[in-house]
Image (cartoon, rainbow, N blue to C red; front, side):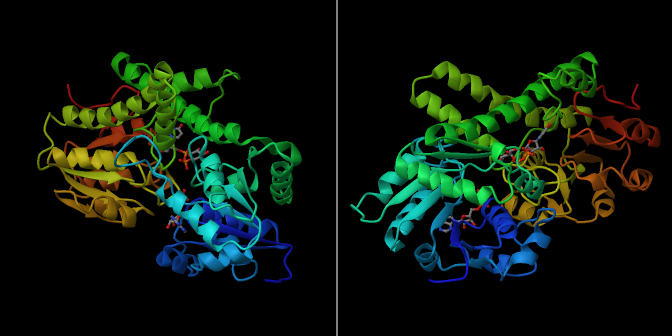
Length: 461
Ligand code: UDX
Ligand code: ADP
């Protein structure tokens, strides 16, 4: 296909990573034509509508400014492959739920299908950019599939892990800490790498573009996520100690974070981390280490996941013991269901675990969230208990015994809690799983307050 564009870029997979990343490339590089394809007709229809399938601050504006000009969403995968010079692969790689490595290793079925699709449809050389989080050595497997039928066509595989976080994806894409590109250290590999470097150089300063071999690049992504989640588990583990000893986790985190060697980010104690990456990536790392016989290393990283599970369990247990050891028939409102604020994504959200545990205790749940109710309904559709979904937090709290704040949405900080208190059953409880509320004020209103890693404020003797 001859067009006025300098390059034809294709992205396979129109999800949380593929959609925003390609929108940014199209926005920053009007000289390139960017097409995003997906097997899901529904997803593509949503990208082509005014209501995008991904809620991300700032994304609507960017997509609107380039859609139909140099950004296109389509289900024509074969045509997309034929027409492109560079193919980003951004399909999902969930944790395997069956067979060898179940619950740990990455499920590569979508990814392998994509590799075969590229092989079938390509009529000219391509650069394949691995964008999904994949375990180490997957690029090699991709290369093997692509050269499997002695194809005359040359495919050069690059690793270019995405570090964006949901809720801040646009900022992260526009102003990344670094862009990492792994390539084969051969003449062809380095040439392909330079093509990708050129794309990013349209808006990313050269000193933030790091290049390496493929394996180091893939591993770096797993390790970055392992380190980030390790910090959260570290602070969460100390929050348990604070609760036992009346220390304040916010003070401890602040004092520790002032050490410039440690830094103050990712030290917010919480109900636990969620999201599609952290759990999956650590478990991948653990699986890899076990595979190579590094049992001590595997156990070390597995501890991060175990503390996260412990933290979520502890939150529910604390609710149970504080509310007189029974939740049966009690009405509890979950404030927030997304795995973090500013996203509608609920993958691996602590809210799912908490909701299920509370229902096991025979509590009645009212879920509220400004963006995630649609996903929450899907996550809890098979749950055997009383669960309702209400967008308005005042309506959600009315008639409840307790509020469990699970997601740190700003809107929860500024609610009229006097009004909420009046509408609830007494004694009224708030379990602040994110430490975002003004605890002293809520206590004065009459609530019994249970933060994370701080002494509870209760009106009981
Ligand atoms: C993460 C990485 O940050 C990103 O670089 C990678 O590309 C994908 O995985 P994401 O999962 O979107 O991004 O969100 P992130 O902001 O990292 O938060 C993950 C979880 O940790 C959330 O549940 C969040 O609430 C929790 N968290 C984060 C804490 O509990 N405390 C903190 O201090 C920070
Ligand atoms: P991520 O958070 O990694 O972006 P998502 O699940 O949001 O993950 O998006 C992955 C997308 O990849 C989904 O929209 C899914 O339909 C799509 N996908 C999976 N397999 C294929 C495939 N073989 N061809 C095209 N798209 C695919």
